[in-house]
Length: 123
Image (cartoon, rainbow, N blue to C red; front, side, top):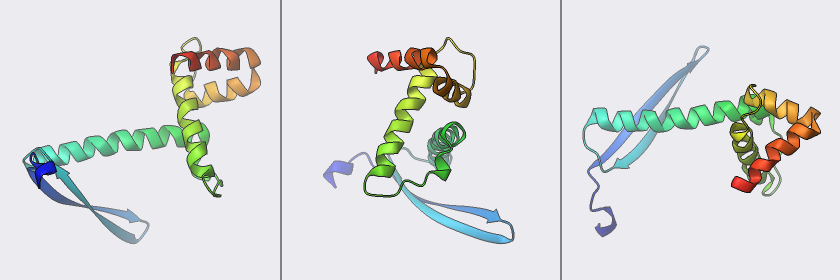
């Protein structure tokens, strides 16, 4: 296939986990331009490490897992807003707090909120 001229690897990775007494497994399929099982596995682990870290940060700072927004595009819109807020809070360096702490402070202190929102000019 012309668009996949550099394709060198097709792989299937099975993930297994235990929740209490129950074991579940999931197969994921990947295509890549790298060769070798170690390289492919390293690339996949790296991808999921970044993905899991972002999700963990969003959940800890914004309690994302408990969001009940479900109608129409509400969930996607709020996800975009949370990502923007996360980036603004990460950019703001005057306060030495966690992302969650900065979020709470911005809700309590209007001057700090304005300082955080000044970061919009650089996005």
